[in-house]
Image (cartoon, rainbow, N blue to C red; front, side, top):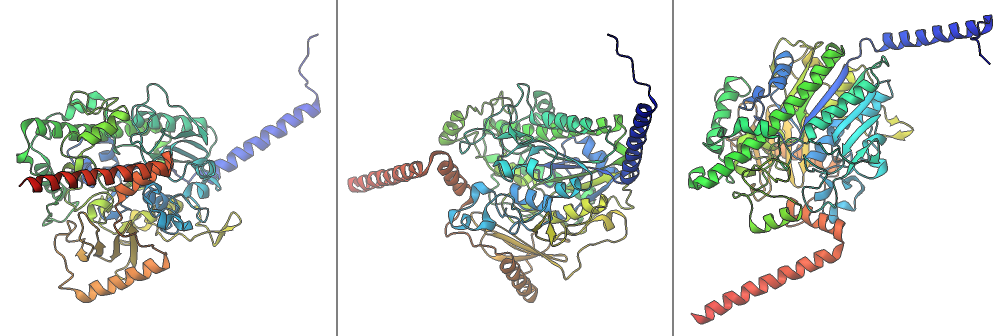
Length: 601
């Protein structure tokens, strides 16, 4: 029997009412969100201060350069010197010692880990910027490294992100789904809170942009704005890139790290990123390029070529996202924020790998062959010497409180942002990004309670007044910003920075610098300004008390702690007992051998 459509009066009116209600809701939503921008927050991993062209680098980054030219470059922006604390502060605006992530969880010693605020995972006493935006009608997406917890209730899908594809670990391979160090049994990737398997054609930068585009398109007809967080794996170890990008940089770094550090200094001065008379220190960990053999120089140059290629590949895929937003008509209503989680990473020895390192890499399925360096199955890093060039003209690098570990690029750009000045030297800190995003999106900061629970207040300050050319600074000469990571510490006040770096590179003493005129931290003012130094030490001590900063145990070394924690978590305490026993036996053998030689004399 043929069923004819129902053209009755009641049915027609019902459909008409439904159509009108839907139209009104759509119109209302469009009017509410018409002046609320999309936000694309892009986070590089371990990117040095001068690694991209707008900050003095030789690497081709045309898309970041275009954003920098259209927006504003912050040349005095600081973050934590390690990934997880930076990410936690970036997403909450709350100090790392109050949001549960004072250090990466892999590096927290047991003496600290027994305290709730030293869990190394994001506490429930903070609200993420994603939650605040989602509750105000934003679509929220994450594609990339999370590293703030990997239990089900710690994943980004439970912290305000509507769609996610997330790496929960500190890092992983860029070509396939495998861990890059043996402390992990597997590379922990999740999609919308569920364990996922990466595609066979995976390359991290391409894949993360593909997923971001997919997420944006899934709600393209909703009329609501979006917040897309894209934390790339680039350029975290293992440093890997497609061959077509590597080829562009082969031979570029044949003159070595000291020449590159000097070249970047000169370019940064020419761009006005740093003062004309900026000086640099020579890092004690930087080796003598001329002492290397021709074969060693060739290998080291290739390591840095792969690093540059990975940066350019990230920029290329970011360009694909920008182009897509243009094509779907969302570019004009999008604000882009680009930065790095910390300064350059200095891991890796002078040679391609020592025997023990090669053994560990082989167990992970890696090689360090020159011909395939950076490709699938290859393990690569740049080492401390090229890391000092990546941070040029700054001192130190990742983990340390020197400017090279904490000062990184920050670019904010969009059609609605047209600053009179293309750059600012105003001091800014990672906790400032959440309040900046909230103000740009016309969303209020949380009160004392949110979602029925007490929450930590945001301590960061919105940078919108700088973007709007209404103010030159958001911090006065009297405001202080404290910081601590694994015993390395700093306090910022006006143009000055009080800093303490632990060994092996630091001397465990407080030093004082004017980082506006001396970003290279070459002239210690501790002797000429003793009162200033002491007042800032007192201010740091107050910061440490208020935020319950815990001292590191005697003899603490970050990388050793990572190894101990990782082996314990994966294999239990028995492996530590076995390793300790083997170490004692090796020491006894060495002692006996030395005693025997002495006896023969």
